[in-house]
Image (cartoon, rainbow, N blue to C red; front, side, top):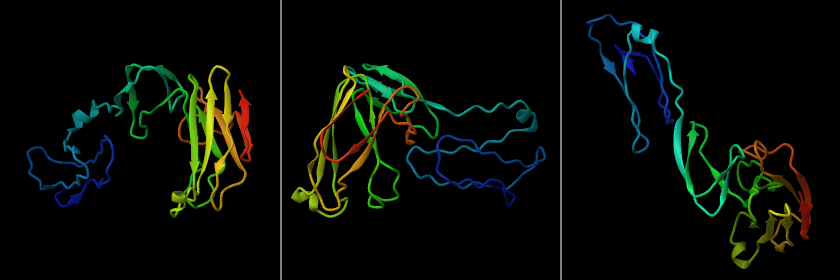
Length: 225
């Protein structure tokens, strides 16, 4: 935004709903040259230019821009909030706050979700340890698949599958015998198992205190919680 050749604001970055402010003294009844540039990077994007007098600013109270988002949780299952660990029944619509840095996300009860270490690219280093998040509330199964991350060896069955099963009533996780192999495969790896609860095993950060640490060598392992 330029006023009489003076740049008043310089905010050109795509973002969610936000407000940017600049201050300038203008005389009542005067005329000024205003130039306003913006880049529309997505359909539906919009920008609004407005002004407030000193008296309007004195009474202005900024709102916290937090939008709500409606999500339908399918029935026949319960769901766990990825960010908080709170459980919710399915078959209904819920309203969740959606600030600029959080996308509402629910995980179906019984899910087994692997969370790998943070990597800049897939072959930076072996994906070890792996955090296994178990979302209680129902039985569940999952198969962990892994290959070389490069080439077409998987077409010749150069890959690994590790079956996993969660028994909700018995609070028991079974990590089955490893099937297959590929060049460079980790013979031994570590699974940090987390049974998700309120404020435990939530969000996208690594869980500092897993419930169990399993040294896996390819043989079947059964652990109870």
